Length: 178
Image (cartoon, rainbow, N blue to C red; front, top):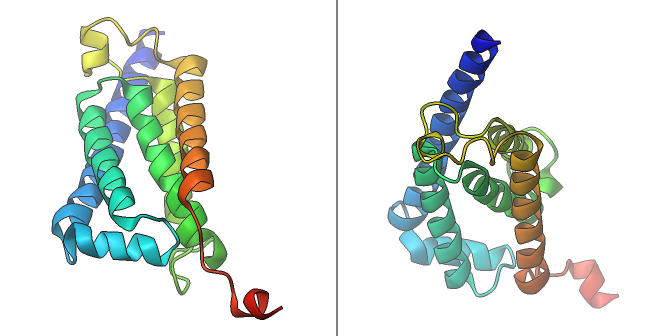
């Protein structure tokens, strides 16, 4: 049984570092790459997320914050929920219409779905031995089915509420004229 726990701890660390690092890179790119926040805001507006600046700041802050929390293993299911929420919004607004494969024009949704699923797995695993959750005694309370539920529900409900309140995609030409 100890070997199983050690394996789960290793898996949690590897997954937290990979997803946490990826989220930090995404957030950093939104803030400081290419068009910076203004460019990200324009891109979000073009997808129907209005006001674009608000969503650029929220996505950037969520990705950076959740990424750091995942690296630290602090409030791990809540941090993983940040990944689920941001990627669920990306799935709906930018990738779903392009099919599964990422190499398709417009980029398909395989990448964002993989991040969502891995984030849910992280929520279920909890922070593991190499985490602040374990150091402060939260790991047992925030793993297993509870961790998965927190991750999936908080991320999914957060994304759904954001989309319901703020997503207003442009209607297709045939819908506008008909």
